[in-house]
Length: 412
View 1 (spheres, helix red, strand yellow):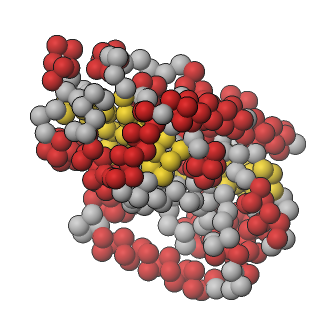
View 2: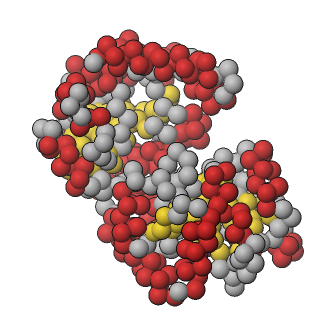
């Protein structure tokens, strides 16, 4: 199995090389790793005490963020090294103020893992959610460096729980501790002999709850909304917009804000063309022109989490493509959330659908029905709002549990 794993890593690398010829993200992935070791040798000094935290991308970073900031506050003598797998995480957070070093993670080969770990020599390693790089994990075990996984979530269909997966399970048993999001994950791990597990929820709730206490204010959005109801569609892909745009004209009395997952000019222009003259850009909207629009398009990054404070209902993108984006951000403002059919891997989405604080749709007809019901049926709307407020209040606190464990580990 080890041979097969390393072979697949090689195949993946070859596929990235081919994809980089036509795909900008793949090219960034390759180029970003060209001088990683040279950069680390320059950044890491003899005697540095390093805590290494790895995130796949931006979403995992937001889950790790409360832990990074908590560790930096409690242990300022340690350097924080933050690594990313994806360019979308690295490019946006390469200047993150609480990390002393931000880097791409080199491909998971035996030689890369050995070299990377020998350079940084971490005292503690934290992987966020479920990035399992087995050559790195093996080298960390060999060096007796503690490895902790946080905000992890496991499902019965994952390869760890298949009959052929003894090699992968053995690697999991070498992890010092798992902090998981739900009891099902804990039970799945215990059923394969892994007992170093604590259920504490998702750390991202701590982050979004903190943001919601003091969000940025946008007077232009407040004026745009006025006395109308406002639907905010966040992190949308073209597949989401196919469901949303046809129903905008069916709600002339409602205002919409669309924040696409990617905000490069061609995507913004694509959305504007589909909607027509009633769509303006948030960055350039003028107060005396707001009456001309019933849709504003968010054309910059970093503001969506704050825009949700103005929403009556939120639609969350990704559910018709790769998987649902962040629903915690709108939920923390106590509003109903709606999304596409691919939500099963997200604990909070499953929970809130059962509690009727969230709603999944398969097409634009179902979306029209859900929006109509939430707008017209006051009890349905108010119950969804209260459900989501209660859920957030019950979900905060995971970061404190994890930080207590890590602080004790570092002090011993």
